[in-house]
Image 1: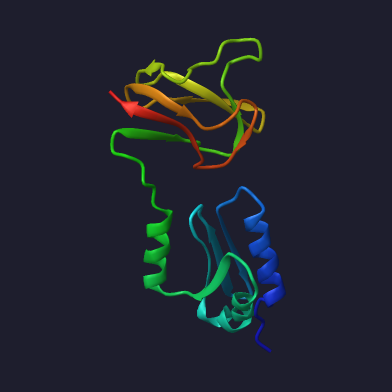
Image 2: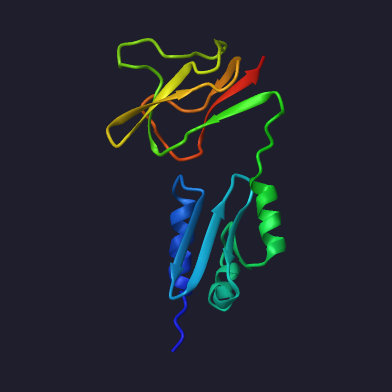
Amino acid sequence: MEMTMKPKEIKKLIELVEHSNINELEVSRWGKKVRILKSTTKKSLVANSETVTASSSIVAQPSPVTALPHDSSLKTETTEVVLDKTPANLIEVKSPMVGTFYRAPAPDADPYVQVGDIVSPDQVLCIIEAMKLMNEIEAEERGRVVEILVENSQPVEYNQVLFRIEKL
């Protein structure tokens, strides 16, 4: 008897991704894989050919997520949707880990940087606390802080954009 993931299980996974801050989820079960990708403009479920029959019923249900067979042309299309459209003169500083974002070294201290500040390479921009360790996030290039995308004490995810810095 060949085991596959049931449409009900796939739907639960889709809902999990839709209602969370995660952008990608991959589940392997009985030698089969289901990968769910989320972006702000398009959401899609990528499943291998063995699970397409089981997941095709999800397409008929009203949902911004659609089930599609896994092939290389789909991967390219999905990648294009996920690719960042950041202008060439902007640097996005992304979180290297999951943790809690802090703008200052202490609750009563001034923030490391404000919008409009000029930063230099290796200047501390913020701290991300992960597993009780404080990790300083530093600027890699000289520039002006254009945008701070996370509020103080907020959880952040791996690869989440924290700052946008205009190159100088």
